Image (cartoon, rainbow, N blue to C red; front, side, top):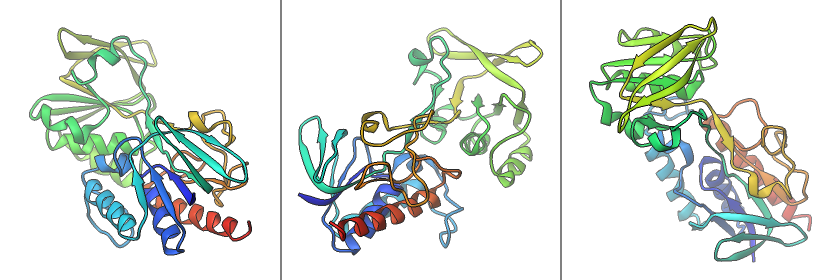
Length: 300
């Protein structure tokens, strides 16, 4: 039996592992994919305190190595269920693990547009990761859809690679950090397509254009070799709703103490209800959730 099982090896989960191990608690981290979470797709992190510039992959690798060196055990298995009680049981496809406390730090996944042929065109012009696939479209026209930080960062990144970048957003203002928006507006090869939504994907064997409709009902055809979708995330909490109450959007309900409605079960990172979902707040959540779990262990 472990003291704490942490589900998810992103910044929140790995930060929690570091704090838990420094308190001499036995820790198992379960991760269904690769460590690092969505930050591994960010080419340059420049808003994390003290670290002026670092790639997301390097940041995640350093965090993983730090947690591992402190003695956190990491297994690449997807958690599928938590059974609550005095002893928590976390099930994966092939194993069951027991712990006194659990921290859910599963993050979120890409939200899709829901357009016809979107699935079939994924990898054939439709992408959810500009830093992963942007280089395939060097000196070609591309489009980005979205209005948050990820969309703006994607457009900035692609502006240095593609011949033209169309940024399509359903509103006339962006939710992203103003400094990033200002930087984007200075790019001569970026065109803002505002108050508009993508309504159709056009293709032969791969994407070659998108149909865009504005609020007045005007339809425009944009020739593009790629569409990078950045319209938000969906929390990865489906398997844990039986033990952790969620809001209408599927985020686990928890305040800044990272406590769920179930005793001994905590949540950290982008999959909980919160105002700011950034790298620094994920790391903060990890520290808070681990501390709360440690305090809980000291009471049982």
